[in-house]
Image 1 (cartoon, rainbow over the protein chains, first blue to last red):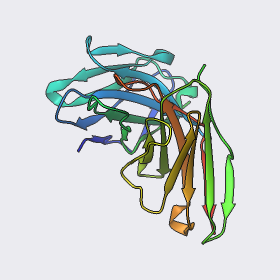
Image 2 (image 1 turned 135 degrees about the horizontal axis):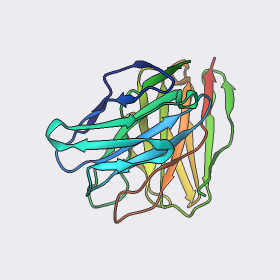
Image 3 (image 1 turned 90 degrees about the vertical axis):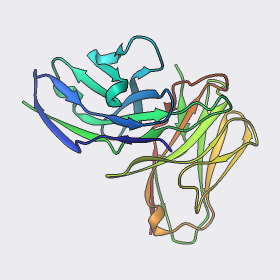
Length: 116
Length: 114
């Protein structure tokens, strides 16, 4: 069975500083990986996804993530955070069996706090 | 833009009541999903459906059932609500078979069972 680990429950970053959120996955075959963001009281919004190809993927709001198969990681980065980036961030993986839908397996989330 | 709507943002029910949570999507997606979100646990998959009248159990189906009579609508049913089902419930939809597609989420229903 697949699993996702987000080692950091909370991260505090100063506004303007760089950010890296860690994500490690466990899956036997090629994974399909996602990062979602959830602002307070909101649903989840997709930041970016990795299916295949270039291992550095660009997303919305200036975020990027790098897929490293050797480390089973898919870390999220942003060069300079803004106060509006304060939110809960979820990494997720899905396996594709070739049939119908498969649900996402989520990590437990990382709560990002931005200091002025 | 894809829109996924959920019938209620907040719901308060009593133990033992039958509860219906409704989800509607407007992009003709084949797949629909129900997750519950709890602090410190992330999101966990309850049930999903890849076609009308089809359903599959997710990771935590106990105490829940689902119904999909129309393509755009996916209902989550708590047959006899219990306090441990107090949670945030999120519905999602995605395009269908033949690949992996982004899931689009609704705003969530925060259910409290007293």
